[in-house]
Image (tube, each protein chain N blue to C red):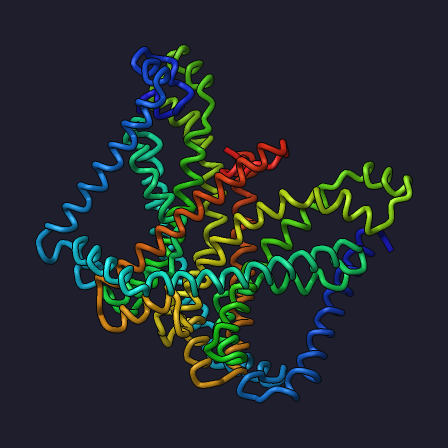
Length: 264
Length: 280
């Protein structure tokens, strides 16, 4: 057996062992000693998952959460990019005045907006999307701004001395340099968008989406459905994070890896 | 596109007006402060005196009623008791999270521990933790214990990953040298491993404090107990009191902003003073 095959076998054995331990503890220790109201056995959760998979509920729940996350992500990214460009390309004083807006939105606990959005817009699709937007916006803005601010000034001077126009400086230096940071920001913020969408569905008390199911089934003490929804949410988040990382890695391969914004 | 905007402060010495500003940094930062104050004042004026319909006053009220509500919250002591209750839960969660995170990192330092616990930790980390709140409500009910467990679920990973990074960055040659000099496992841990992990623990705390605060507010909004900032916010919203809602919400935003500012600056000073390569 080759070294890499041995390694794969070891990792597989490690995961199978862990899964077996979790199953044993759950099936024979937790489930029999706790009420079915609080803890459903693995078989009940499996039945719930197969039932949802066969009647299409699993897809519709995931799709609702995904669509909220995606729309909020697109709006938040566009707003973050635009705001970062305004701050980064404005004169010193304007950028210094606008900067605290991004920092304040970044530092604020986003869920504090829920009661305000609830009174203003209710609990439908739009307020949930706006909450996701509030989470994505500062992340993309900070990464983009870092990209703009880390452009090498010597290179700018050199290009200017060589007679490059502003448009050329932007297209040949600023945009390629900043794109690496933008891609990292986008890759990093999409998994956050999914988590925020689930959190928004729970706090707005909706009946749709994975968060809505978590909320309503907890109210009805349906432990099997709560655990099943958690498993789907974890799988969705893991798959989307994986896809984002792959896209990000592929995109970054053409731009090079940026430094972390925290380091600049 | 101006040259300054591309290069930021680095081009400050390029032009003579800029050079004048650089010579007098006090004047420059004063002008920034004045500009920020004037902008904030203008925003407040527009918010206060804009016609009905421009600002959704039903949700965000207006500055003067918000200030009055804030004063009322201070006078009645609701703001302080709420802040204290929230801070208490955050503190318990931080202590518990740090303890569990550090113990897990120590356990997974050994290959056997990593083999046994690695997949469980990776799988737990992948769970969208906000979703766990429903599970905790089922298991523990609407109780402060559920808050602490919920927030700890966020915090422990910050400490776990920080300490694990600290262990990975240990100088292997130094470890071997200490072992050859006859240091026991405990002495090795006390003399070399623990001091090396301290800056990483500070970094973890910087991440964990705002995270714990935000997740505690989430927990209080979803599982309102007796007191807490999130509880007060939820109560004000339920009674459609927009000015009190906004006063509490803005106070929470202010705390979040100050935490980011204070912890970041203090940690930066600390790491600079001990000369570590940690960049915050």
